[in-house]
Image (cartoon, rainbow, N blue to C red; front, side, top):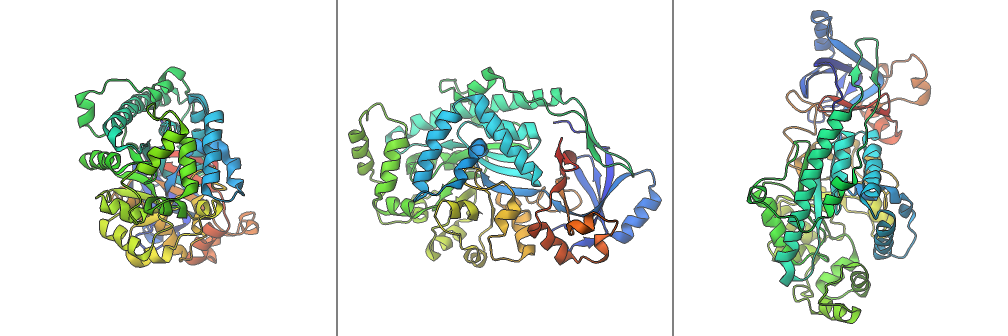
Amino acid sequence: MNYNTPPRFLITADWIFPVTAPAIKGGGLVINGEKIEAVVDAEALAFLKESEPELAYRHYKNAAVLPGLINLHTHLDYSNLAHLSDFDGPGMFDWLESLVELSRSQLNGPEALVASALSGAREAALAGTSYIVDSTFSGASALALAQVGLKGLVGLELFGLDESCADFLFGLWESRLQALQITLQETLKKTEDEVLAATKIDSQHGDATAAGGIAITRTNERLNSLYSKTQPISVEFLKQPPQTTPKIRLTIAPHAPYTVSPALWAKAKNWAQERHLPLTCHLAESENEHNWIAGEDDRLHQYLLKVMPKNPQLNTDEAMAIFLKSLDWKGRGASPVEHLQNNSLLNKDTIAAHCLKASEKDIAILAEAGVKIALCPRSNRILKNGIPNSRAYEKSGVTFGLGTDSRASSPNLDLRDEARLLELSQERLLALLTIEAAKAVGLEDSIGSLAAGKCADLAVFDIGSLSTKETSTDVSEHLSAEAALADIFEQRNPCRLLLVDGRAVVSAGQLN
């Protein structure tokens, strides 16, 4: 991604919301390369304009500037299965069976997967999202983030219930990861080479404008390498953190307690810990999960029989059913959270999505272990699981933020819509979508707020009613910070500008 902006320029708006400092009326930000050089109030802004009249700037009238939003959980690969979000079945595992069936039939190749992930990445960018935590089996979401120009933490999913096969299954995962690293690096380089025109912030009278676009690369040979299960793994590869780019970190994602054995999960935990990377997972999402881990659940049992890859040694449904019944690491009366804790699988590097069916004891365990939480209330509601108790997490001191989950279980990828389901102040909601989420991914020193020295990741949203925007009225004359923030969450006004490392990914409300 090579969206050029002036090396140093100024953005001003009616309101600036730094998040970790009070809102600024009529202030601005000086952007210098990939970083924020300064956040200035109205008085300092007047002095800056007088002392540096040649400095390129753009004023966003009737608008507010926020840090780029951070989506803590989604599956971009499933974006073209959005019709599944109209789910009206009896429960989550009925939806999951449909998801697996349709993903295998409609997203059954590299091109379809990347196209689907690109659709989601673009939608997220247009909603003001600059950073995404994604779970993927194919790795397509990493390529989509690279091509759109967003940042992210991409967890390559890991599955396996048979503890005796843990070494073998983990080796397959490592091969998939190595293939994804190579493909991502090639995609980034090719995307840089194929940008046909730059985006720039016009000086004084211009707007953020875009010419040309991104040439989308869908080379089958490169993408097919994601599915390689036989590539040799070099010693050098095993020793290095899988960071192809500072913008996109690759990590491990043991799917859930009901699809990953403790032995295999332990390998994932150790792998992430050795590389100082977060580990992502699903946890305590449904009553079925709780019942199956604690004892038995026929619905989840039937789901696993239907969708889990067949072990050649268990070549009949009867043999697979006997195997599932014989698992000795489950059925001990523990909740999913207790199950992971009892096996020493929770730590401060864990980012757990959902944690919806978590008792007071579970939440205390999560807090003590330092686990980070991604709440996904809309997906939980659509899949008939209920709404998370955000106040309980607030009281516990757990670091948490919000995720949209995938388009297959959510109406859109707009985090503001997610936030509206929580009974928290809008100031707190903004923090959850920015600095608290940044803490969850361990990047609070570089993203999540607007401050000198931090990355120039920011989103500009319209504020004010439609009638106000269609006139010359200056919103800042009558709209308080509280009203402006309420407007951002309630009016669903579009994102006018999205900068990621100082480069425009969205300008004038359009993708570049």
